[in-house]
Image (cartoon, rainbow over the protein chains, first blue to last red):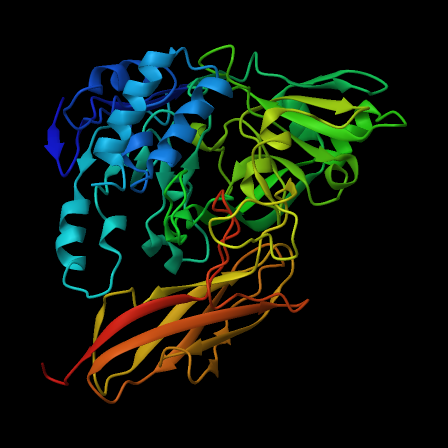
Length: 104
Length: 399
């Protein structure tokens, strides 16, 4: 039922199912996991960003500047209401820039 | 019990693709970094951009065909609580707001309106965003956030006429069954100006290529606004609201906007002075075969093939270059399936000498709109239609 594979990212799919009975149609979405780079702040990012979206939203982005990542996190808080306090915001921006930023 | 389907599969074509492509000089390798494939319900193996909400991209090899199969069409949702079950016994499409009467239509009711059928390209506003330079954040699509589908459904105008739009109506808002994960996240609601909504070709589609829509493509019915980007093609429609004031929801007022300039573009890296909602698709073409990085034999015939389309005007010409844009020739155009469909084209080529060749294609539509040689830029990564370049290697005969 499970396979775990890796490229630069690990992910797994448990099941992806669809059926229809009469007039009802139902699907079961696969459980796809994406691993984030290890480092300080990873737990905050995994927990808080995952409230609204899978973290492949992070890993697919081009390597951003600190300003780009800061603007993105700010948008999540101010526009979408992500429950991230000021100190966590700083930790998250630093983590994203360090591991998915252009400064490397 | 029909249509029972259970599949589970994870593919790692990405690793193989990376190995294969790394041999090609000048290829943007970062685009392949982390490429993943996944099979979601009712879909085939597609490029996985994101899992929740799902964003799945069609591999370009499907564009060898005139019609994109339902299971291969790209998937793009905005907010994570997407519909995973719909019971047609209870599903209703509600029409109300500034109307003479409120409607609550079942699928059977929708089926009683005149059935309109046509083929139209569906394309995400951010298709090809990963090619922008400088790069921009957002869904990192290559060229596969599009497809050509035969849609069937009820004319939106006929449904609105049944409800009776009152005088003074300005915009019409469309909501679907998806909803936000937090109350603070704006629900995905889109709007069209009344005039556009009443255009005879806008439909509430309940069939894709003669079959019900896959759940991930908007079962049981979605809006189809042919010629316009897919952001307006609201999936799993539930509510249509006629408004006497301009719609001011986030996804129109703030998101999905382009610079208010003739090209929808600005100086790379700058900020637009004024923006407008994205609307009609730009003209573009794509070389489908040979793929970038392919190897062909000197002295042997090669058929360069591809597709071209524009936002609601037929393609009048596709020109092809095999020498990086110095010389151009006319491609032969395939069957015309209407102004909203893409058209297939082909260009016979017989490379004489071994070496690297840059293939290019450029389409022009019936009102003279064409494609820029250099990439246009805007901060959200929309409207991509740069003249594509496929680099191929010609090997010595018998090599």
